[in-house]
Image 1 (cartoon, rainbow, N blue to C red):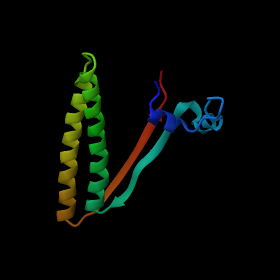
Image 2: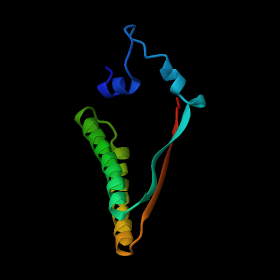
Image 3: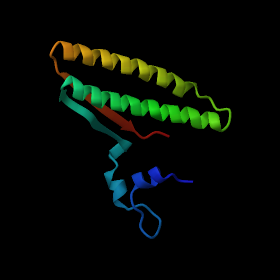
Image 4: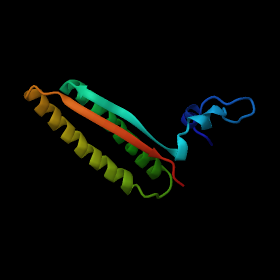
Length: 120
């Protein structure tokens, strides 16, 4: 069964049930693309807000993955559990950097491109 999120991402369907033909036109050639998720210079408070929000959302995603896998069959949750640990370490690093920037009157520059590749 298709999730509501997936249907939303695909866009509105015509009455035929097929996605709008322009969706294919929006896919980059070769099935690869890069987006600039975060780019700029921020105050320490703004940087903390942006970075910690992203990290917390990823922690939440993996926590839900673990709960879903544990609630069903005996699936391996080690990948998500390790990612949660890694993300918690990243969260602590961000906190330390932001505190240092605040104490030293510095700004925080963030450049976060995301490369997306379609694979089989």
